[in-house]
Each structure stands twice: as C-alpha cells, then as structure tokens.
Amino acid sequence: MERKNLTLSEFKCDPFEILAKRWMLLCTGNFKVGKCNCMTVGWGALGTMWAKPFVMVVVRPQRYTFELMNDHSSFTLCALPTSHQKALSLCGSKSGRELDKIKEAGLTPIASERINAPGLDEAELILECRKSYFDDIDPSHFHDPEIDNVYPNKDYHRMYFGEVLNIMAAPNSRYAPPA
Image 1 (tube, rainbow, N blue to C red):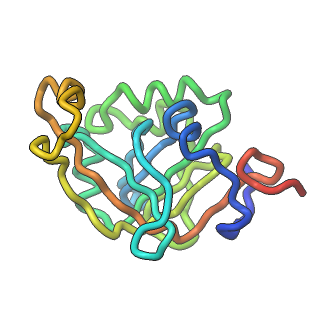
Image 2 (image 1 turned 90 degrees about the horizontal axis):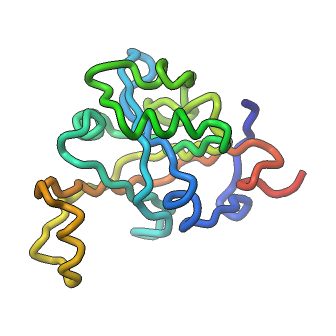
C-alpha cells in the first residue's frame, strides 16, 4: 500500500477508537535478519511523555512478542483496513512460537524507514517507535479492585513506552489530511 510520511500536526487519529475498536498490530523484531512477530493490541495509549510523542502498549509475559519486545529496541504499530479483520483476529489468538502468524494471516512485512522492527505493507498507518521505557503492572497500585479481575492468572502486563519517530499513512485514509 502506498503511504506518505506525516508530521505530528498532519496525523489524524481518535486514540480511543484506533486501539479499542479497530485494534492495531504491534510488530517487533528485526526485519533485516528475518526475526519478527506481530500481535493484535487493543489496549494502550497515544500522547506526549517526556516532551516527546509516544505510544504505550502492554504485553502479557507468556506472549512470544514479550520476548521479542525485551530483546529489541523498536516496534511498530500498524492499523489495517477493516477488510483485514480476519488477520487481526488470527494475530490476536495464535502464538508466533508455533507458526509464522504474519505469513498465515496473509500479511507482508516491510522494512521501516527509521527502525529495525518491520511494518506491514497492508497497513493504512504505521507508527515507527523506539522503545524508551518499560515497567511491569503492579497490582498493589490498583485503585479500582475490579481491574484485578482482568488477571485471573496473575499474568500482569508489561508496559512499553515508545517514542514515535515516524508516522506513515495512506493518502486519503482516515489518518491523513485530505489531499
């Protein structure tokens, strides 16, 4: 898919809709050596942290992506058109340890412009991010006791903060200004 680079002021996004309703693919690893994986994410944040544009994503420790996120310094978040809902479902339900999810989902990894982690050719939007911080969710800090119900196995997420280094969006997509 054709994409163009966007400045922060050109980037159009409803941060509540893009993650919770549309989902995104979190891709990490190293495209050049062919070691990468992606997983569907529906929880996270987009904003400003330490005076830089950032995204925050969460990954449970049993996920294969968790290993790759710990081993690599970058990741992408890719928004796919709604026609790729089956790919998003597959990437959210299968493990990259057991199969090549990207291939199985019919997706095509591509080199990023500024980082080692791949983007996806089918994506309408690619956010290239350099990992800047991580922390594990500590249940003793929950103010709402209902949150712990999300973790019946006590497999608390790790939060990864990434500085957004590059934004690419398909022209005339919901993420780019009108041409």
